[in-house]
Image 1 (cartoon, rainbow over the protein chains, first blue to last red):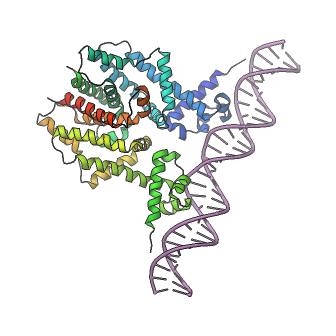
Image 2: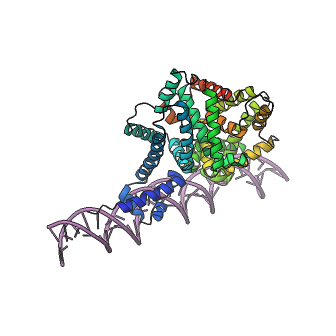
Image 3: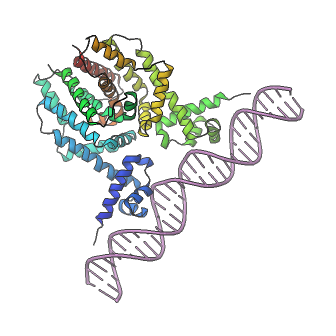
Length: 204
Length: 204
DNA sequence: GTTTAGTTTAACCAATTGGTTAAATACTTA
DNA sequence: TAAGTATTTAACCAATTGGTTAAACTAAAC
C-alpha cells in the first residue's frame, strides 16, 4: 500500500504557515488547502478536523523550539556561562521564530492546557524530572557563587526580559524611534544589556 | 431629545466584558446584546459595527490603565523611588486587570496600529512629548546616580519582568508548582525580586 | 484484466454570524 | 392631543465556514 506521506507533509507545512500567520481561530481550512495545492476534503481525510490538524502543528513547532533551547544549554555547568548562553540562545531562537511567540500566546490564552501537556511530554522525552536551569541556579547560590536570589523569580525575569521586545514589537518600534527589534544591532545590544543587568544584580 | 445614555452604558460594559473574555474575533454580538439585556440591533444602532464598538471599548480600557500608571508615578523624581513605584504600580495595575494584558496582546498581534495611535493620543492629552521615565533615567545616569545603562533597554527589562508572569500564567503555575501568580504573596515577592535585581544591577 | 484498497475531487450541507429592515413603541414638543 | 423624532424589536438575509458525501481515479496485488 502506498501511504501518501507527501500530501501529509504538504498539508503540515501549509497548515503551519497559516496557523502561525492567522492563529487557530482566524485560520481557514480552505486557505490551508489552497496553499498546500490540494482539495480541502483531504485535510479531513488526513487529519480528521481542524482541531487535530492544529494540535499536530502546534506540537511540532513548539517541541522544535524547546528542544533547540535545551540542546544548546544542557551541558553548561558554570553559572555565568549558563546565563549568558540562555539569554543568547533564547533571543536568537525567538528572533528566528517571531510568529511562534504570538502563536504560543494565543494558545496560552485559551487556558494553556495544551502547552502544559506538551512541556511535560518534552521533559519526559528528555528524561527530566526537574528544571535544569533552576537546579543549577540553586547550586550556584549554595556554593556562594551568586547572591541568594529566588531561582524561580530569576528565571521569570530572564525570560520576561528576553521575550518582551518581541511581544510588544510594534509598540516598541514606534515609541522608541530608531529601534528595529529584529536588527542584528538591537539583538546584540539586548543580549548584552540583559546579561549585564542580571549579572551585576546577582554577582557577589 | 432624550439621548439614551443608559443603553449606551449597558452596551459598553457588556461589550468590555465579552471582548476581554473572548477577544475581538471570538466575541459575538449576540452575546454582548444578551449580557446587556437588549436587542442585538441596538448594538448597531448605537455603535454602527462590531469594529467601532470594539474600538470604543479598547480605547476606554487601555486609556484607563495608562492614565492610572502615569498618575501614580509622574511626580516622582528620585530614581530609586521612581523605579520602585513603577514596578509596584505596574504589577498592581496588571494584577487587577489580568484580562487586559491578553486583550492588548491580541490587539498588538493585528499589527499594533490602534495601540500606537492610542498611546500617542494619551501622551498628547497629558502634554507629553517625551517618555518621562526615560528622561529621568538618563538624568540619573548623567548625575552619576546609577551606572550608564541604556535607558530604553532598562525600560524594556522593567516591563518584561513585571508582565511576563501574567502572560505565561498557566505555564508558570504549572511548571513552578506552588506559585499562584495572583496571590498577594507572589505579587509581593515579585515586586521585591525585580527591584532588588534592577537596583543591584544599576546602582553605583 | 480484474479486484481491492487507498486517494482525490466537486458539490453540497448545516450552523453561525455580522448586519439590515420594516414595523412597533416610547418620548418630546408644540 | 397630534405630530415628529428617537428607541426598540422580531424577523430576515447574505456570506462564511468546518465538515460530509458519493463518485471518480490511481496503483498495487492476485
